Image: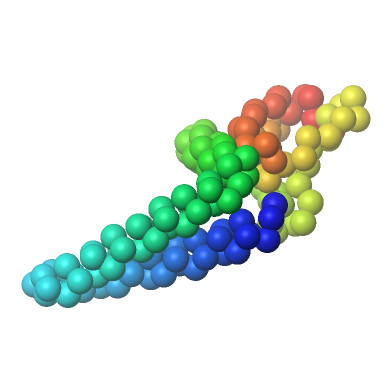
Length: 141
């Protein structure tokens, strides 16, 4: 990933954090204070526009990297959807553990962003390529 794209992603993270803060502010404003609510809503809309513009800059800078980011975002959403009905007893992430993989019985390894083990031993994985995969526990070491 290029330095330019990393910088743009960092900016997006900062803007997203600012937007979350403004959402919390919005919920704390008394309902009778319409003018203040409108001001915060407009700020949130401006922040969403900034994120959109930054994403467009990533696409212009490196379209392949942009497509990877989109694929990972879509896979993460699918992972969240699948996870709603599952009870995980173990979750490993690349961010927290600096390593994230599952090893199959044949010795091959699947590197991942997230690997979550269910109570029944099955695994749900978000791969580095942006795919969400599910594996039977009997296939994993």
